[in-house]
Image 1 (tube, rainbow, N blue to C red):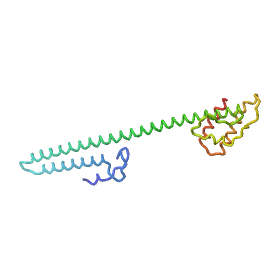
Image 2 (image 1 turned 60 degrees about the horizontal axis):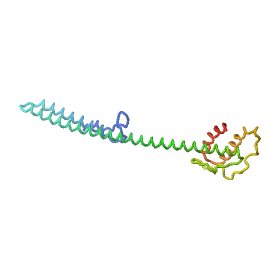
Image 3 (image 1 turned 90 degrees about the horizontal axis):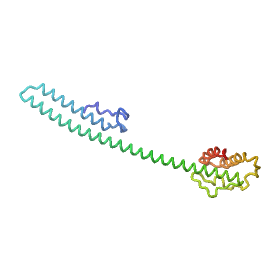
Image 4 (image 1 turned 180 degrees about the vertical axis):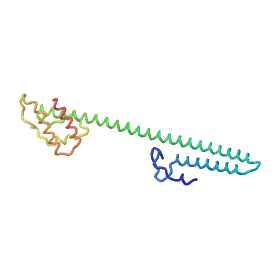
Length: 203
């Protein structure tokens, strides 16, 4: 085989489809073999043409028959390689699609859990506003631990608030909740509280 076909082809769109490092990729190696066969047969045909004799024509026919047979075998080999590459590509696409589907379902589930925790935190703030106490009884939290902001909680959160000052209660409760969270390191709870602040504006 000619030395020019032993040079590794770089991985990329115009080269090997699979990164093989210093090795020659399969499709490039097969093409080099076919090209080498063609050059060999062409050289033999020229050699026969330069040789005289009555059996020269028969030699050319025999050589061409061998050439056709080898080309047929090479084409069959190429078809098998193409089929193998197509199957490999299809398997990779199917695997990526499955991973994407799993990731999407996981993200959707996490969003539902976060939304549930937001609703529960809003309910905690409502109870603090209406009942003047921190309470998460009967509420479920999936992504945060309620003990982060309820542990060692004093029952008397704020003094009784006259009706005309109720508009400021939600803000005071949210500020109090922020102070409790700031003492911890629960980043998920801080993210949820940002959403809770928006919702408490409508309380």
